[in-house]
Length: 395
Image: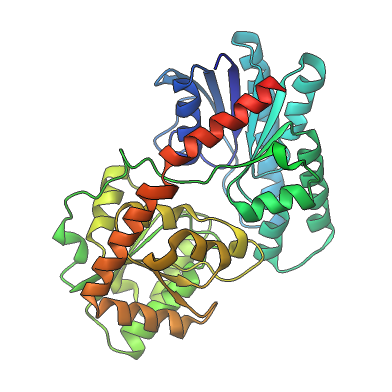
């Protein structure tokens, strides 16, 4: 496939954003010349570098702030940098396709210039439902919500091709986006099993306790870490389970607030917040976990979103406990136990019951790994990505 592709992603740097990096390397391996615009981040401070043949342009962002004003400021800053760096990439390398990864649904503004002036194709890689993301964070449908609906519609309208992360998102592209079915391709987020394998676990991660429960992911207001901490309180304080250690891997706008919440609930001694850590350490820690938790509560976004953490738990052969949400159940199947949505006591009970059944945990972990190998891992998704590009470039 002979094409030049510019990928724009705003919320994470590459190669830390595993989905975007796998898309970029898959396209490069298929013969494309690939460039990426993304923000800087811890360990990814260089503003310009070439990694594995991919040209990476990075830009700074304002500090993360949990407010509508903070998000607006961040998005405007990102849009300004994306516009400047896209023009630089055009001067230096040219490109045939702009591949935009949301959120936010503002990157179409950059794409529109190159599409109408230079005939560049626009691929919309739909990572999050931005209107539902806003509604889930602030529990309201106000003017800002409907503005996001308008931006979403404009993004769909401009896109030559839409890449959806699951069938629920595809349905939104067909219904709200009014896209033709042949222009919407499902490419799921999934790890590369050749790089995402269980490693030798370190017993020190248990901190002297019999059981270890893990979490991996973003720590934002819609990610349910407050549910997990309340479940830890139910187990450790109310039920006296001093033999359970919790390992929470990741960071986000709620990181410090969650640490304070752990202290307030009296569980700080048995809850470790690692922050962002290298992949090798992350895999070693999760490999030591007896089970992993996805505490995403039921809300308009989570019910129809595919969570990367579930795929990564399954790739590492870890059994899962989570709330019973539509796309989470599709992803995990029998590799997970499901609690009543938003019922913290039931979530704690499911964790306690599964910790008591080592045989069931082993069986569930094996089922999850096999499901990844048979149908969900990246080597099953890469051909779908390339098919979407072939259609886009051949249209």
